[in-house]
Amino acid sequence: MTASFAAVLDKALDSGPTDQSEDITAQKDFPLMPYGEAYDMGKADDGTPLIDPRIFNSLEFMRNPYPYYRIMRDHYPVFHDKLHNCYYVTRYQDVTDCYFDDEGFNTIPKGSSSGVLGNTQLELSGVEHRRRRNLYGQHLVGKSLANRIPAIERLAEEMIGDWDSMTHEPFIEDQDGVRTIEIGKAFANEFPIRVVCEVLGFPKEAQGDFYYWYNSMMTGLGGSETHKQGVEARQHLEDYVEGIVEERRKNPTYLYDNDGNVISKDIITKLCETKVDGDYLSTEEITSNIALVVGGGGETTRGAIMNMTYLLLNHPDQFDAVMKDESLWDNAFHETLRHSTPIGGQPRHNTYDIVMHGVHIPAGSLVNMVDFSANHDDRVFKDPETFDIFRDDLYTGKLIRSGYAKEGRYSHMAFGVGPHLCPGAWISHQEATIGVRILSKHLKNMRINTELQAKDIDGKTLAPMGLISVRDLWIDYDLK
Ligand code: HEM
Image 1: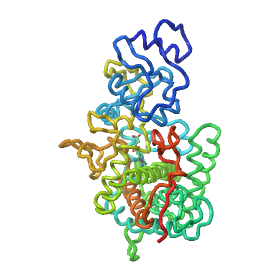
Image 2: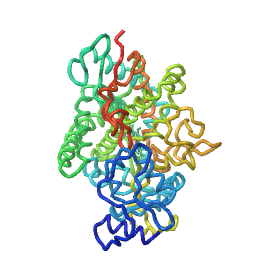
Image 3: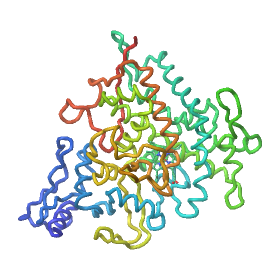
Image 4: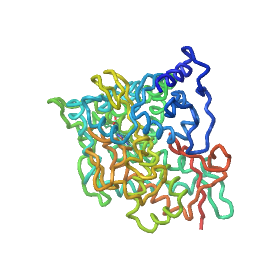
């Protein structure tokens, strides 16, 4: 096996002698396979399927990753990718163990994100991380959030209400009593940013600017060309936040419920009053936290709304069931995140030499935890490629840092587990279920416009999600 694998790798890297007598099929362009089938990259002497690491850069992998992850889980639970100089951990149990081992697997400076978002808790581990983690995380859960739910519902209603005056893209002129609209541009792209802005306690007039800064910061994470745009947007955000912070240090402001009763001080005011190690947080620290919340909660929740809508509309019986029984929205949300999570995994660095599944990982290596794969591990989830809101092996209750694995039910990995478990899990749950519920309440007989919606390689079937969330989702609905 080793010899064949080395030969495939030599060929993949174009770096060494290749024994042409071996049946090696490594190549740079991978054919697009029928969805769910892996391309045969050759076999080792013992019949083990080989993985050519160039597949990870291919269009085929982007649209059809799961059969390849299955090969990795079954044959290379720790895959050493010598082409990209990193390791992939793909089984549910291993990913969970590594996430919990905060000292053995450190979070790492996430490249351009630290430049754009600032010095955030994402990059910290151990005590330093714990000290900062709850600064605002506590305000995104429990009673403080429950009190905000009417405001989140109101925001969704307002955005959908605005459609009546819409005359440009993503709206298509009504025909025969049917309206066609693209849900991302009309709703899902902006809704999570507006919610976060509202929950943090920024004035409503700032929501448009926040959406602009958010978009620019996200573009800035994309690479060197757009990095400058991201850094500039963060500077604008910082200038704006600085003014607000200075003001709130003097005059605290409050959150109110729909009846005008004070709920509590708003999150920015609380951050202004927070001390770490005896010192108040600096404006820079507050801005970084705000940038992280805005950055962390936007694209992810947008993806959850888009994917949940797409999956439910593609499974009309399950959509009908949710419409009849509101309690099933929680199942729909968690099954969406298990089946098609908007965030595929997280990088870590191991702090000491380890051997996992016989693979030696030298200290300081880049080790990728593949949440996508863990969520599709059939050691845990039966028939994992099937979207089924009624599955009896998925935990759909409130998420906890220690994860949930009891009585045959397991938490999905979309929010991570352990010390870095997403503090926005609960609020994004509320946003996504409220958003899709209100959309389905307003859009009568809502269905996918199969002509406009992107197709798979056969030109007929709707495109699979693969490694990216649904970008554009074209919907028809009846006006009467
Ligand atoms: C469906 C939506 C979301 C998904 C799938 C998601 C996913 C994740 C994941 C996987 C992590 C763990 C990172 C790691 O282990 O290194 C994380 C962390 C984080 N998320 Fe989310 N997230 C979502 C929504 C949100 C929202 C709405 C917010 C804020 C309002 C948010 C704020 C954060 C923050 C601040 C962290 C850093 C936590 C830490 O390092 O301790 N996320 N998220």
